[in-house]
Image 1: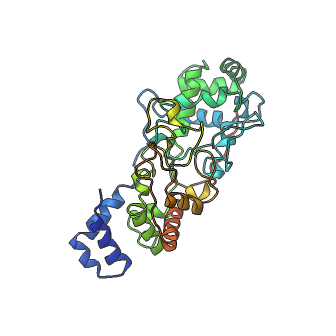
Image 2: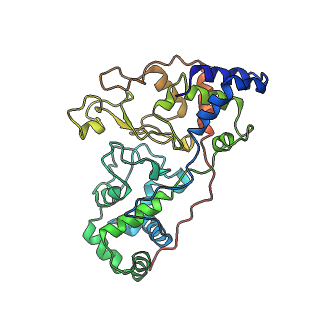
Image 3: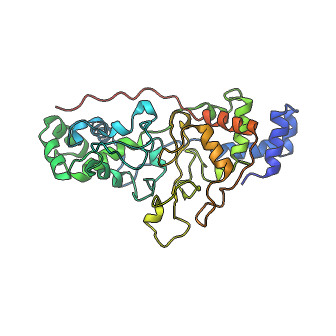
Length: 341
């Protein structure tokens, strides 16, 4: 926990330009501790029962981009998780084979390896557990498991790819899960100006963004949920927006008052590239998001104690936006692979 005194030191000594030698009184140490909480991990976590191999990841990438995983042969995992859209789709509601669409927005896959359990309501224990929910769903990819296994087994290139990844050409649901999950765990945030700043490049972000970082960790209370290198603690919170039967995690825990209307805290990595916002795509811009939190949301027993009116000034709102824009990463374009034949 960073003290208000430490934040005050940083404002006084750094943003106001007073001698940096005076930071030794405590402000510099406090800032360093605060920054260190957001440093990127050195490695991606892969589970012991599904360790990383290049062959498995390559197979997973082919499956991820292959529309043959859908009943109509027109929709792939990448349809809703586009690399060029920061691994989401830019829509307020996901759309699959059913023209009516779905009730939830497609979440980004950035840093998915670090934020299990998954799903807006957290119903998936891990990435492997997610795999066949969209594939088998009538609303989404509309592909029964048995039919998918038959379809892939008829493609010689897939038999060869499964052999390379698993030692033989047997195509099973578990192997599909393992391959897709292995590839998806490699989808991580690109290096952002914020990352360069906390590594020591003092000019990587603006003075406005630095003030926004302090607000993010202080008055605005954002870091209460959006903490750590992926800017999420993986928790489920009622932020005071959902209504009616849209009760999120409360559907899984009907006797929990606190989990009613609670949805998973999403990563803020690449957030400026990923409108619209919220689980249902109901908020159009980052400015609207800040205003929503500033007002405090619906007051009810399930609402998170962190959600209350913030009384942010116009300048403070602008500083928060400036900071959030520093979380946009840069990484090489992800090119779809050649698909097996």
